[in-house]
Image (tube, rainbow, N blue to C red):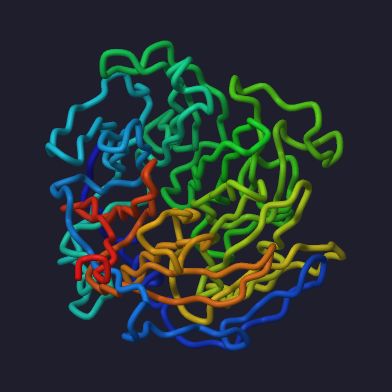
Length: 427
């Protein structure tokens, strides 16, 4: 169901548009390795020296409806989620795109508003086109570790139970003849509310064969927090990271959070995490987190961890919110930025085209349409480099092909699949 939004919804969006301003980062409580600040570490600049990687973009496919996630079936074919509600089988060589049938019947449409109703200098007018969609629809896609044998495909999406009731769901179905069959619901994250922000929905399988899922706290204004805050309350499903078996059952070795904890809980204190990435050699899972006013983070997932939200933030609270004083131990981010980045679907790179990037974490940024190359050592961020800045684009996802090629998805009305090439290799 699509609608043009006015009135209160526009006021909410105007508040959202004021988020990009400087601040002094707040401290967070010690419980892990030392946090690295952008001003403390080396943010390297792209060099034109011989031998240094020279990434350039090449559009492979355009005309997609806000692509959110993609998983390769072969080097040339992939399954691609459009946030606007289609799952496609795409061929990057021929340009073919075939709709996959059998999506969940309760898949919520992205509600639409017209930015021409906003003031002329609004960030939404200048950077994001004339029409903007809320964060509802089809989100991440994941293939079973045994996909070649069982054909299981996993999807996360915004589910609609009533005209004003939305929540996060994770399902799986078997891919057969360009259709998903035998859909099974694995996880539902309620309560179902009218709020269309911060669903989360990041998916990845761990080295242990378990499925990990991010669930956002579903609030926009920090002042909407109840007395027992959403992301800290272990009896509330929102603002958490889950670990479940491929069939949706709960692993016996999940961390304990007490008798009132929701099933499958693995970590808490999450605001709006969307991207998860498994390091293929260490087995660590890293994830991105959206802050409020700045406060964007990269984190390493740990069993039973509390990532602090909303008791603390590396940014600034929105709307004059003052968090309750609680004596809790929290896990610090591996990195947080002193600017708005809006990091999302990250990936580890071990390809051959960019030899100097091997072992680096690639993180897209929606706010500047850029790609961040993150050099790590163990669970520590050593340096970052921002590449391919394009303020008129929204880089949603980094995807690595089976042969190690780098692709980007842009979250736009005219969404694109973009190949990142090393220009040095063309000389």
